[in-house]
Structure formats: C-alpha cells, structure tokens
Length: 74
Image 1 (cartoon, rainbow, N blue to C red):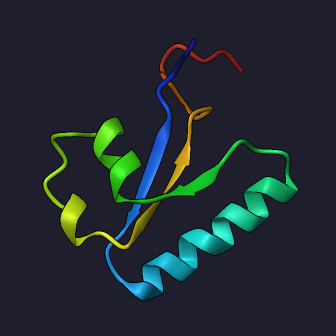
Image 2: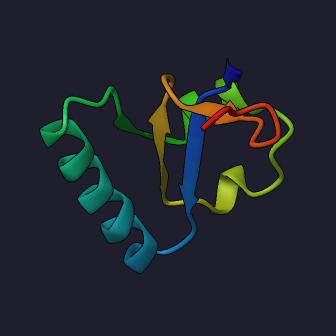
C-alpha cells in the first residue's frame, strides 16, 4: 500500500541549501533519482507554492512514495 508522490525539499537560505546538497550527494551514492532544481523548475512543479521567489533551490525526487502505516502488514 504505497503511492508515488515525489518529494520537494525547499531551501530558504544557504545553510539549508548546503544540507540539501549533502542529501543529493548521499542519495545519488545510494542510487536514488534526485537532483537540485532552481526557481523555474520549482515553479513548474508547484506553481502555488508561496515561497518560490524567496527560495535558494530545492531537492527534487520524483521517486518518493507515501505509505499508509495502517495498511502495512508486518
């Protein structure tokens, strides 16, 4: 029971941007499909996001999923 939804981690300052850059490096080393995107691509993905013009960048992963923990079977 999972649903593909993608993931965006928006950095609002240089410290947060360094953090998502580290996440990108580690994720790619693990074979994940991630990349840093800029304002233009962020606008295409989330046009109603109010902080786009204030953001420094974002980490995007189209392969992220959400799981309903109540439907999981152990």
